[in-house]
Length: 134
Image (cartoon, rainbow, N blue to C red; front, side, top):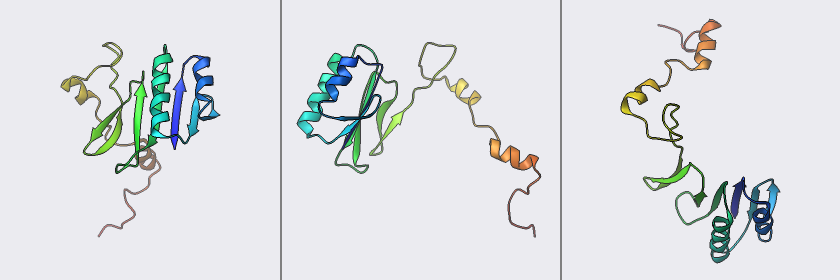
């Protein structure tokens, strides 16, 4: 099974992809293809894209049972101890579009001490846990 997501690509490319895959939503294509056809389709997609993004998810023989291909997308597949994860780039308002954070900046972006749920629960007067104090 293959899922191909195209965004901001030429209409002709979307029409070309519908020869092999079924478009279930605008820009979202699904279907079953052989490895050879899948690789050729990916080559056609990357050659004909001027701008936009493409993400392909397909079945693979690994622990997750799937693999990813991306084109023009800031999110990149990264192998993390045998599992493929999608790495989202860090966005800093002061510097360019995407960049790595400074260690000092990372300290500024720490999680808050309490979540919104915890704040609401505290404001409503609920005890911290359901256990009675001894």
